[in-house]
Length: 476
Ligand code: ZN
Image (cartoon, rainbow, N blue to C red; front, side, top):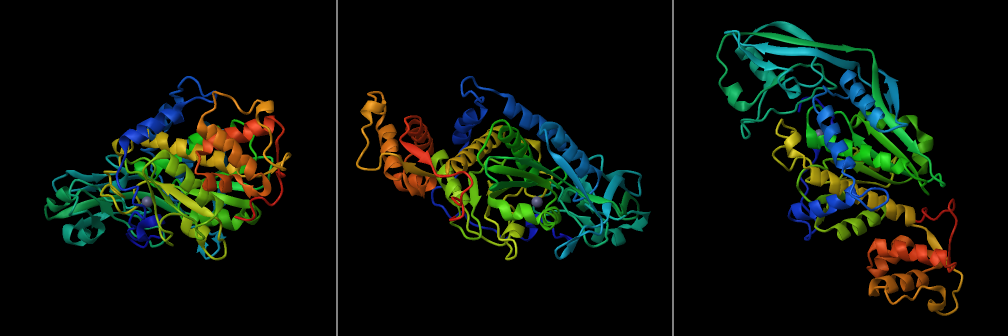
């Protein structure tokens, strides 16, 4: 990687920390796909989310994205069409963002490398990755020996085109499959890099879904990589679908959805919105949700925040998964974990960046992303959101002894053992101090049963919620 500060290229390889989550589970993903496809009413299966995610993936894949420029802008405009209320922000080149500065805007019209015999050996129209991202403009003729240091390939993956960037150091170059690079003949090559680097803007997109509480959940996905499907269009399309769902009904918490270029986009967002920063109680970076590896959760810096606990509970319910250790590497969770920001933001993904052969190459294509994986990730996120929504304290209105359930219709013959236990655990912990997460962890009962139990007890007038705008979340 040439002079870039992009996302996870500096990431160390992290090994799965959980013994449970060592193998991909396609069948599990399929089962959860069905869950994600269920419509709002929960009855007939609605294939729309899966179809929408695949269609969006295919539409966005060819756009020439970068950390600034029209490819990114076009991407965010497509997302605005899909996610009503999504707002695009333009931040001028030269704007400071903490220790960083928004670079000149980069745009590309075309790029070609022509061999001495007239054969086109690299062309942007063949693949966006063929040009080093953020290449400065250049036009000229060069002998192969001089050209060689500017040509990149992967000898261990000879059919793959590597992804290279040079955001903060002026440079240009081409990326080729190694088999093709190795076969290049000597002689003079014609180079055409038709790009512009000029004062412009960095674009990012934001949606706020207001809830009854000002406490916020921040959900972000980097949207800067060109023609790489898993990293990170997979998370972009899942987050778009999740945002539609979030906006669809009234919620307790406020949700802030962010599509931004990696590193610099997140830094720009954080530096411009100190108020929003203060309200973030839970957050997730979404990245790499489309491969067929198991879901992997990387915890917040603290490791015991409510989002960590909610993610652990939900992933355990969904089946094999991985819990990664915290590390100051990876994607934009690095920015959220920095000492001056320190927001409780975890990361949900699958196979960690840098640990699979398709990573940052042309092999990370549309076929590498699986519909069942996208659907399972969406289902997991909806459940995590549901747990966060439920995570209030309850106060029993009949705390002296066990209330008589039968006379309130809460002791039905049709109730399962789990349903009974969920009622009793919820009542026992309705002490005004314990949260939903406490009940779930203590009881080991499915979060869905506990949610249902909470509803039944509320309807029966046996428990009250302790305030919407209180400090319930502060303790995490
Ligand atoms: Zn990446």
